[in-house]
Length: 331
Ligand code: ATP
Ligand code: LTN
Image 1 (cartoon, rainbow, N blue to C red):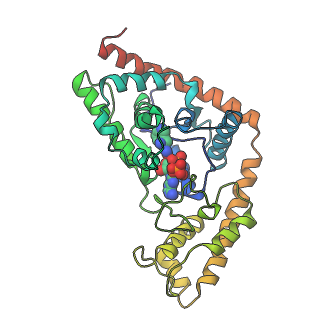
Image 2: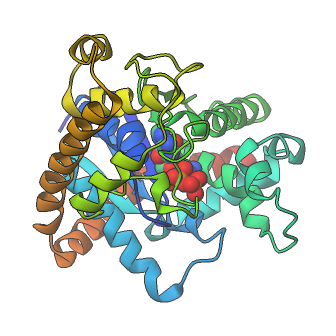
Image 3: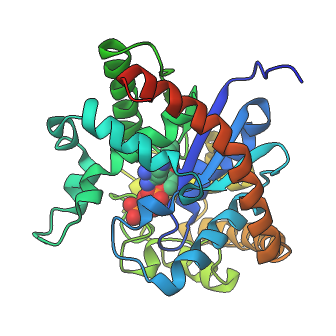
């Protein structure tokens, strides 16, 4: 079989918290829309998840849930590699090597995700949380990745991966391909329903912040009806003046496949309530359809897919790791 000439995509999500439509619209939908045109690799990054406390009884269930969400979103495991990070040891090995020779503490101190997650004065923050972006760089670089489709909060991490690759190539030999982030123009930062000034997030306490992919559709409809809106009554995309309505317009546009300007026309002269009611129905329809697909996939099928994915990932990762070790002088 000839070598694929397609560019490679790599991306991943942590098995922590409950995935929401921000994760879906910013990352997973983007993968599902483009992955067949690439040589695609999707990972469930369990070693990233444990940088904050996880319940050992629940972690593997979460891994299966995330993998099922990838599949229910339309990723065909025959056409893409889908695997669990901890099944491929090369990830931690490359992380160590990059830590030792290319990563700088001064770079990691600039990472906003670390600053945000460690800013509440908690002294029990793990060293792994600080080193998180180096493991992410290892994930990406092991697979000679060209493109990393993510939401915009991950841009800084992908840029760090690129910088580490450049530094390594400069200091040793040209081993790594330089990856680029792929960030959607629309949907890369879905905002919280209860606070449209901040991104929708798994870790915000209030459930009114987000629509979870496995939410009961009726509950999701209520969350949309309760979403924060703005002063005035016009349904118009204007992030500065109308962050709440603008966020809902983005969600509507992406789920219904309609342009925002067409939605603005459709709702000219109409009230927020009517707009929200329609959006609530669109969200409920989406969730019903999504969950139908999700529920058709058995845990056993997922475990087989992850095992097969690891078998396909290992040779690619090991080949890169061998080149890295050779460049450093370790054989
Ligand atoms: P946390 O709340 O703990 O930071 P998260 O919700 O950001 O978690 P991640 O696992 O960090 O979830 O993100 C998975 C993927 O979803 C990443 O590509 C990330 O950029 C994307 N993503 C996360 N939140 C959003 C959002 N609100 N809008 C668009 N994309 C998002
Ligand atoms: N940090 C990412 C998850 C992640 C990832 C990756 C994304 C870990 N390794 C490699 C893309 C490529 C996040 O979304 N929180």
